[in-house]
Image 1 (spheres, rainbow, N blue to C red):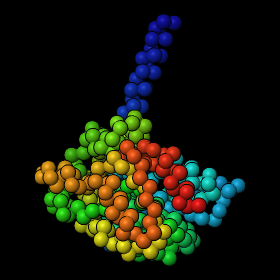
Image 2 (cartoon, helix red, strand yellow; image 1 turned 135 degrees about the vertical axis):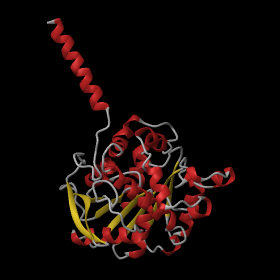
Image 3 (cartoon, rainbow, N blue to C red; image 1 turned 120 degrees about the vertical axis):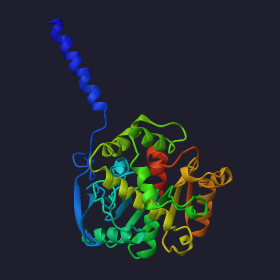
Image 4 (tube, rainbow, N blue to C red; image 1 turned 90 degrees about the vertical axis):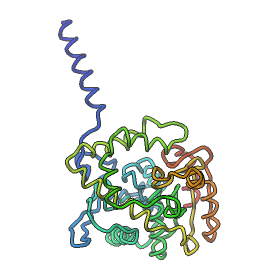
Length: 330
């Protein structure tokens, strides 16, 4: 009996250790379950047949208000990290659409010229396919740059615009040294779970929370896949898109109601590791000042500042984020 119990506990311990290890996942995260059903929009870009993954979650039947919210993810993320935000919005009566942009998440990892114009067009095609004539567009981080471009291209479709700690509030070309796509790709190919965790930790000024691993480990699992070169290439190409296609000069052209939610402890700079001059480094990524400057440029914009919170308010300070978001949508 003792030997049986000992063997049982050894097997149990081995199972727990094994389950704690990151899963090996391919370029499109096959086998990784998203919180809501995933569907696919077929696209053809530069002669390549691709699929754009998305979640389309209906509103709570008892409170459905006929309105839609589109949630756009950041560069180092994928649509699933909006899980709790989706629950809050659907409970409040909103239909919610969460796409994975081409190059991210469960969508195809294409070797193409990436542009915010094209990603916005893909998103518009998705909404057209779903029969949505108007939607609230919410963008976090890189998704904020995309949301801004979408609102500039399709103001008639954008009911309201919400930017959560968007990147691109400054022109990175001014302070971040240029690197080629090949150089960026070489760096991406060196990514490991440890290096990813070190970078993601910078999003949290109050310490990296263990709960964030659920969004980190799927990305780390891709580094162990034979598919990872595809992911690394897409990551390099989208880095170049962010660097080469600033939106910071166009905020004054926005003609839709806008809300900025800015975690005040955020100091994110795309390409920060490339900056060698301490003075330049100290001047960039100053989100308190950047948020106020951009809010002043957008006619009628509302600014919500969240003290002592970093780059991802919807994960780090969800209650404050939801209050600001729902208050603006009322």
